[in-house]
Length: 203
Image (cartoon, rainbow, N blue to C red; front, side, top):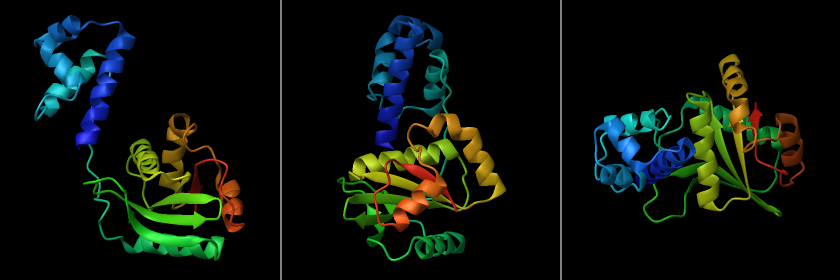
């Protein structure tokens, strides 16, 4: 949560710069002091109330949302277990697999669903039966890739109508971070090769 607040604070500051607003202008919109706005932007406001965050975001042209997700240590449901099993059968016996791999940062409670180690590098894999908030879920996976020092990140999503629609709607926002297609990724992984880029597999 601390990291999330730090990232949100940085976004508030960048949005203010883009809007050409001063600390005083934002403070006036929130009926707060410029020092309070600066503390928000530096993630130095202890216990920042959600409504204050939402009002600050609105003042600089952003929208704040809070979503809850199952913890990374949550027990997988039967659907996810089946998806993982089918995926492993599809790509065959390549590389070395590890599951529920913790992020190697002190105090970090996150874990990757799986890490596949090949001769050319390490690939993080996240498996989703249902995309609840596509952009947020893929962004979280991208951050896991960064913090775990992985060469690639592959998202495996169950091929349902709802998931296809969610990916289509989010395509413009995720294209840069996850450009590789299902067909390209499956063929590359089945050959035991490191994908050229991150990507999403509908499976």
